[in-house]
Image 1 (tube, rainbow, N blue to C red):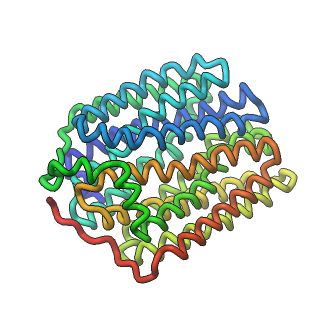
Image 2: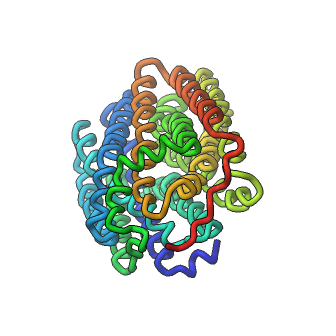
Image 3: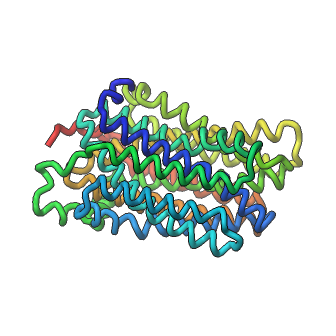
Length: 411
């Protein structure tokens, strides 16, 4: 992967994105603790609703952002969204009511919904060779894992010195640093394939039609639902499980989220070598079927009285969910790239962004409100059933003879 760093544009773009995600991870920890302060044992319901609002912003804004990206220079769009996110994060320490959390989360994630598809659509232009693009996907996945590994560890260290309100200041600094790095970078423009008819081909509706027309992409959408069902219990219920069920301190919330990120990061590092030996289908489907098995274990963990084994078991389960989720999601860009032309890539990634986050829109409130109303064991059982059903659907939809994604040459 060291060869990727010879590309100056990718190096700066990746670093800026990683710094922004580190700040986002600090906000995730701080938001969980803020919700627990405001709502106590009903923090799961507050977080579930807040994260559902986040997904509504993603689903609604990404298609609009796709259209805007065709008219606004990509670098300008990325920098503007970073600055907007920095301003909103600066407001989060002053929240005193639950509705304020919901409003600010919607605004913050609306800006993120504009940033992410533009960032994803830039990477194929930087690495036209499939092998380099696969490595870039894994490195990009590592950047996302910083939100789940390094950020919680940093948050745990900072919480020994300051209150969680100060973590939001770290979020603001992360977005500002990202904007500065992108400002110093020259990003590639549309290639020759993006002719005057590209606006029609790159429309968000075309991206959705592309997903429904390709069996591999329909399977990818089902796999996103399987991952969302397992991931929702991590992001929504960790604070209640750790502080309420296990009676551990606030810093343990960071450690639990860090275990999830550690599993995801380790898998992302191993995937390039694994994908050279096995087809995408042979890697992604077994990982998806591992998720309901882990959720069954989480159900048993939350049903039993806490014991000395409970904390290591939770860390192991969260690491396993992170590892399986990374094995499912990281190769997804390869499938999209193999099913879309160069001109269609922005629309395809925007559609994937909206459709995949629609899965989280279903599972986040399900995890939050079920935990608040029926308890954690029922929540784990229901989400496990959703994950199993989605993995089975992907198995049935994805043909066994599906070819590997085609290598695309520069336009």
